[in-house]
Amino acid sequence: MKFIERGHRQAPTVIIVALIDILIVLLIFLIVTTTFKQQPSLKLSLPESKQAQKGVAEKGVVMVVEVDNKPPYLRLDSRALSTDRLQQELAARVKRDPRLGLAIRADAQAPFEQIIKVMDMARGMGITNFSAYVKTPGGASP
Image (tube, rainbow, N blue to C red; front, side, top):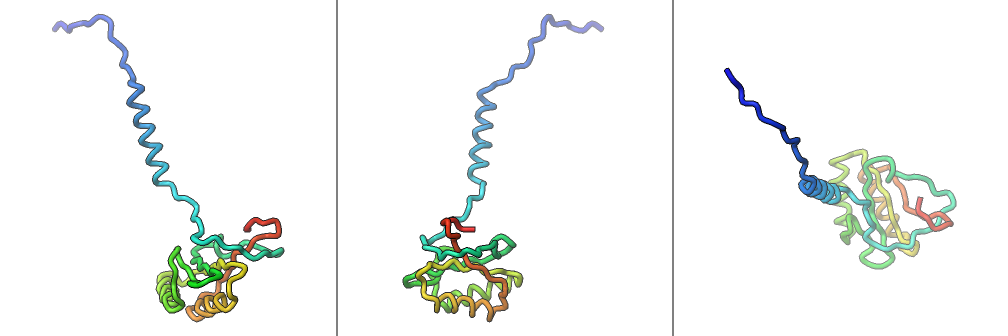
């Protein structure tokens, strides 16, 4: 049996343009699927605190309620809510996760009554893990 011998065999070539296309598609996929830091829905002037510490926001599951200095005072997930609607949302989220923490992000000029209402609602739902967003005297939030 005689096999056909070929002369010189050419080395396979790598098409660089196709590899660049794949790299660009992967880069776009990475950019689209990356989670970005949540930006606050309101521009609030936070109160200052010299004793600021890390709060519930860094410790696990947390719900952030924003209290503005003008009506509608309360916001949750960038949506303005009434106190009744906030209470319903709190109840639903506590039912899903009983270890839920609450972070209050209130404007320095926000009515204290609104902050107390949020805290009372949360305590009524069984939330005992509270925190408040503040800025340090240097101007940075902890």
